[in-house]
Length: 276
Image 1 (cartoon, rainbow, N blue to C red):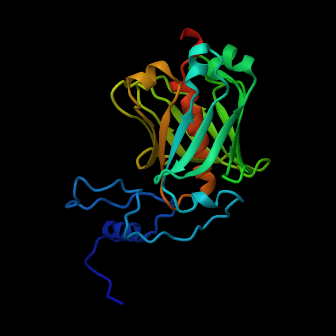
Image 2 (image 1 turned 90 degrees about the horizontal axis):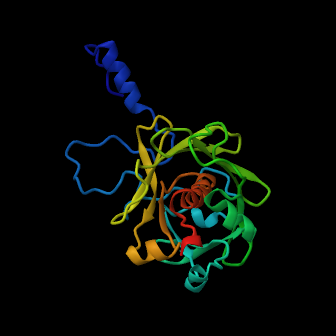
Image 3 (image 1 turned 30 degrees about the vertical axis):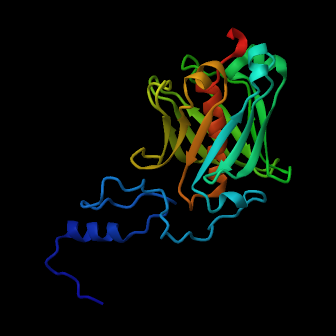
């Protein structure tokens, strides 16, 4: 054991202790080295040389596919004929890994009247099933306000995995300028923040909602709305999203981020087919 530096000041000793403390939040980026290359991947992304640890959390049945993934693609399925005729039904999504393999399928349960009258603020249940057809995640959205005029009754989602067992909540936070959401665990304790851009419309690029720690200082992931081209964005409701998170993040929080993606889609990117 090396001898203690007797010449060090008390402040230097405290700083050394802080550097030795382990970082307990999964995926929190390490300190950036000054000579680090500018084109290095985001700190939450694992590299080919990264050893993926075993999950330290209890994994609900059906969420095993999320243990070793750090990025998923959410692709909305749209029937073009239904869009142009105004008979489009409830949303459906394919959830894929980065290799394009489908791991889940999401189907919105809703009443046709709700979709047409309430539009993006409509209540719904999103049923997420695995490839065997067994429902593994349920996302429940009640009817709530969507504007900053009613800060006491903003959006809130409940995520269940498996259905009937609550694993998290997504709560919209009032902010006059930026879209903000809090990810909560099953005990309604704040765990993560999601902060979107001032302008959520982009005609030539992606729109990123950053996943941050509660102090909003560290970015550990993001939910991106991919720009799919002028024709798709104007004439259909089909949206493509990417969700990135630390590979060692609790799978229940990964499921909550999937639910957040559906909420963001309806709040900021869904277009009504009434005007088509």
